[in-house]
Each structure stands twice: as structure tokens, then as C-alpha cells.
Image (cartoon, rainbow, N blue to C red; front, side, top):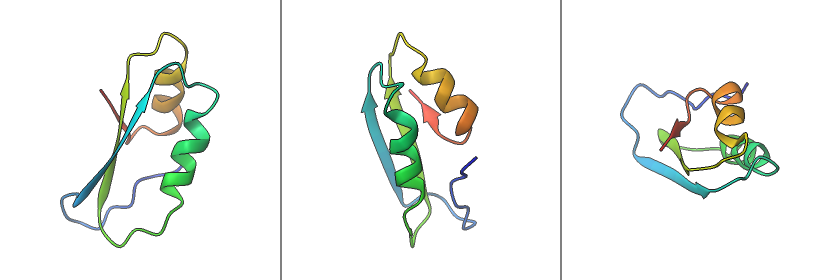
Amino acid sequence: MAEIPNLGREPSASVVIASYNAEETILPTLRSILAQNWDEEFEVIVADSSTDRTPDLISQEFPSVRLL
């Protein structure tokens, strides 16, 4: 399970992903974002009103990602 890096300070950036019924693509998307080399603390937010399993998949594999 990938974790968002914690550099001991507040996030200086947010990554906001608009998704809807993206169960086929959301996990590879989040893995790609979290695999980047970030110099600053950041948070990932997924704006989601899906009716598929997208929110469940995110919560299970990436508990530190916020769902709106």
C-alpha cells in the first residue's frame, strides 16, 4: 500500500482528481501520482460521486487519500 510522504509539515500542494465510476483507472492513477518524487509535502484528494466500487477501492488501498 502506497503512503503519502510525511515530511513533518503541512501540505504545500494538493492533487485533486475528478473521477466518476473510475474503478478501472483510479488505482493506476493514484499509484502513478504517489510514485513521483515530490520535494514538498502534498495531499491527494479525489472528488468522487461514483456508483461503482471506486470509493471502496481507494479507501482500501490508499487510506490517506481524502474522498470528497
